[in-house]
Image (cartoon, rainbow, N blue to C red; front, side):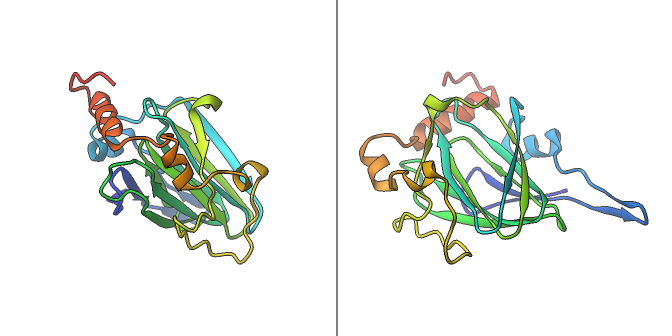
Length: 202
């Protein structure tokens, strides 16, 4: 398993070692010890989700209040998608930046996003996305930013993205920032230190 940090701090691409044989194949798509060695703390597993999407569907950009936020560890178990990480942490050196990773059922890569980062994806085929979450779903703490916001400038690889009613009505990054609804970089760093067990109170 190879874990590579992305250009946005707190986001990692994980490439597993696949062991094929005439019967099929085997791989480890998540290892608590390997991920903790990179992040400095284990991923708390509170909820596991499955999401299915048709080609052209875009979901996101979703994020949760910090603390406690919601870290995610994702892999595509069927099909191909483009997974997008957005830095929504106000005060971060890469605030407003985004980065994309292709996830599919061939190379079986995974993606980890720390608390405070935004997440979205575009289905390039019929897809099934599996993801592990550090916190359970809490509607009052979870928010959406419009995935087609020109200020984000995400280059979705489909001409006419299919959005849910919720995502299609989501506010822009500027509106959420003006309303004080974005996670602060300082709060995210404080919570990360708390997860590492250094005595910090979130």
